[in-house]
Structure formats: C-alpha cells, structure tokens
Image (cartoon, rainbow, N blue to C red; front, side, top):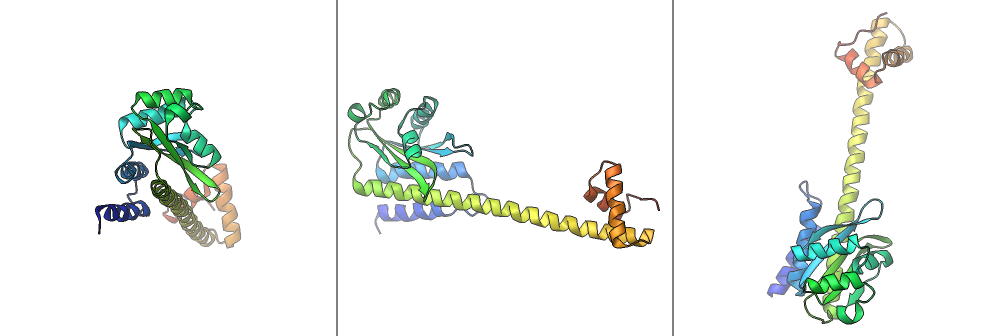
Length: 237
C-alpha cells in the first residue's frame, strides 16, 4: 500500500467518525483542512460554515495566513467561498492575477499572502449547502481533475459527517426531553395517588387539587408533585 493510499484511507476513516461522545467540530474541520494540504499539495485550505441564519463563519484553516484570508473575505463580503456557498457550485480561479478580477480586494489580499490560485468547493448534501472548502495555491496553476475530485470527495464526506452528527444531537435532545417528560409524569401520577388517599377523593379530583395548589402558590405542578411525594409539601384537607 502506498503512502498516499494509506493517507487517504486514514483520512476518510477519521472524517467518517463523528458519532463519538467527545466529537469536536473545530478539531474535525482542522483535520480536514490540514489533510487537504497534505493530500492535494496545495498551499493552504480553509473552511467556512453557515450558521442558523445562513451567515458564513470561518471555522478552520490549515495555517494562520489562510485563516486571516478567510476572515478577510467574510468581512469584506467578497471572495470565492461566498460565491461558492451562494451558488452551491465549485469556483475555480487558477490564476488570481488574470481571473480574480471579480474579487479585487480579496485577490489583492490573497496575492499579498503569497497565494496565486484558489478553488472553492461547496459542502453540500442534495439541496442543503452548509459551507465551503477553499484551497489556495502558491503558484498560478490549475488543480487537475483528479485533485478536484478528491477535494470534493473530502468535502462531501465531511458534510455528511457534520449533518449526521447534527441529526444525532437533535435525536439525543429529543430522547432526553421525552425521558424527562416520562419521569415527570411518573412523579405527578404518584402525587395524585398520595393526595387521593390522603384526602379521600378520586384521582381526578386529586389532580384538580394539585393543580389549584400549584397555581395559587405560583409554583410548577411538577415541583408541587415532587414535594407531595417526598412529604415536603402538605396540602390541607
């Protein structure tokens, strides 16, 4: 097995492993940026992700000058990653001096940082675009078809991993909320039984008493129910 093949295999395994308890998004994306530089031979790589409102934020970069350049294009609302995210299409600029005129501020800043070419690839799954991956070259040279294909594959795997983790997180939240609701219901049912026996009323009437007491004392029903069960709340007959 060649070093490249081994590196590719290790990278894809690491990018796919997002369903772990200690998953860290920034660390995950930093890994992607650094592996893009190693595997594709580019001078720098950066990633931006969209927040809940759709605004892009710089989340990872292979080095400091790339990070500053990503921040620069976001602050100036001009650059390939913004176009890539907006149009959900790859943006290629093999020579910033010749084809970067649509981003004059960005192109000047990129050249100042030592970059001469840039490619931006959408982080997209079907119709959902969550960000963009930018690749910066130190010379005005095109990234070959194989390199672009590999870069898009890395972006796609990372996108699937991020979306899968988000879905898992939401499911964990829903499950926790459901369990909390079930636990609350158990406590309330126990309190209704205690009150029904203590006051010698029906369970339905006991719940009415419980609810009325909670309202009149400006307390939550669950709090009062828990007090009844552990005998820290006494409702008079």
